[in-house]
Image 1 (cartoon, rainbow, N blue to C red):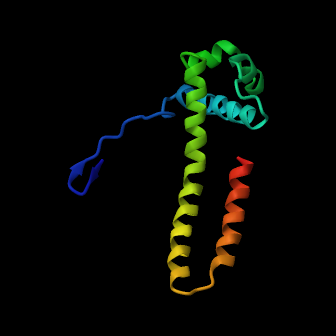
Image 2: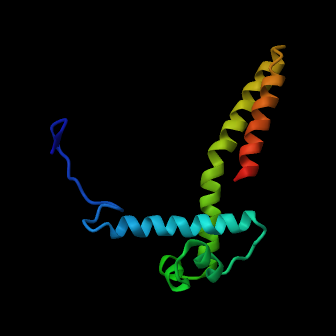
Length: 127
C-alpha cells in the first residue's frame, strides 16, 4: 500500500491473528482487570486470583497466564483504574482553571462549575 509516496507496511497487531486468539486474550485480560476493579469497589481490597477467576468465569491458572503473580495483577488493575479516571480528572482541573480565570474577571460562573464538578464527582464515585 502506498501513502504519500511512501510504502506503508501493514502488520498484524494485537487482536489481528487469523484465529482470534490474540483478541480473545486481550478481552480476557481486560475482563480480569475489570473484575479486580469491581472487587475493589465492593470493598475487597486484596482479591485473590481465585476471587477474580470466579468473577470472570476463568480458572485461577488462566489468571496467572495474564499476570506473573498477584502483585502484578493488582498493579495492573490499579493502572487500568487510573487510565479510566484520569480523563475525568483532567477535565475537572481544566474547568477549575477556567473558572478561576472567570472569577478573577468578575464573572459568575461558579454555579456552572459546581454543577459540572458534582457531575464529575458522581462519575468518579461510580467508577
